[in-house]
Length: 436
Image 1 (cartoon, rainbow, N blue to C red):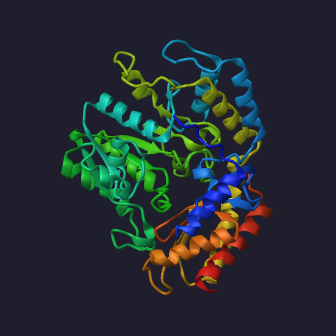
Image 2: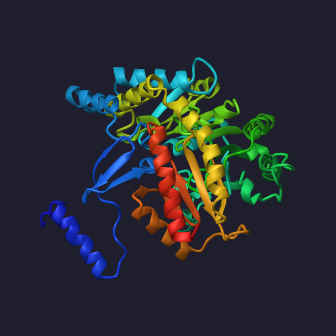
Image 3: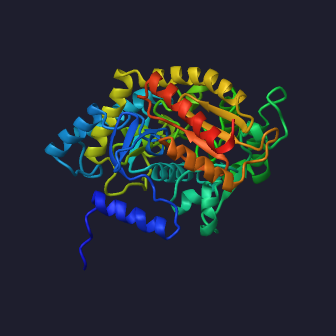
């Protein structure tokens, strides 16, 4: 087997030149170093990370408490298995998660996994085991992970190549207020998007449905922030029909929206809570499922058929403990909430000056810009959005784009000065591509 050539600076430049000469767009950002909310590429250009990695780098890059915790654990031991023995980092992780969780009861339990997709997969398995039912309700627009089963649940074009997938998936409407599927405006909204769950359950037969799985805030499909009271209505419908509620907080958890979890904005207790991304600050792969004491008691007498080799890995546990303690010690959740309040006013002014902005929506430090033809709600075409993407790169901004959306999810450690600087740069990029 031929040895792989090391990724040197010269090789990166040569590869980039080859792409350009072939008429192919420049490859992705090649990172050389990162610190806080800034990333430096191999050419020495400094970018503001408005993507937070992929919405997971909540504590920022090179955050010392988490880095140090991972180093310490590497020096002690690297592999244990939760099915064989218990170890201190595992116990500390479960204790901290229980302290944060909105799931009710002193006996709530956690399962530690490797990713958000696995967290959601295990939550669905648990719901089916507890209820003996098969169907799962999910939103029309949603994303729950890239495994075959979770793509099947996701209301996302990425599932199309893998259809037919998991059987028993049923769809409900979205809290997409800008394009309300029920034809409502904020002044006339009566939570029809939440009431649609009951319509679906009565159509399917509640006794056939194990659970409904909903993102705390729809992330990858547009950052839909549900109207106040939405989750309370969802909770009441689930209770009325004996259906379990799974809150997918993989993206919206750990301070991202200005609360520990997005469901906390409505004060709701889900039956199962899934999480990943920010759970470790983005430093190592990790995730978890937390269940209420009622769900946990089912497995006192029944086998829980879940678990993979690296679940509850001690390295991951140490990162989780350090990340959670850092969120608390540094006041990062409150900082995200304060930043969100500032951004609400700043983005309102930002949008008034730019007629191609259909809506800017979000909470805390999770936002999306929806770009439309001026005076309409018609999405900007892909060619125009490509110009926006290029302008953002020229202005040294690392942001995720999709369809006519630009996402804004910086690390929670970003300073007010960095926010102001970068928002000005976003405006400059938009104006450069679309006019002012």
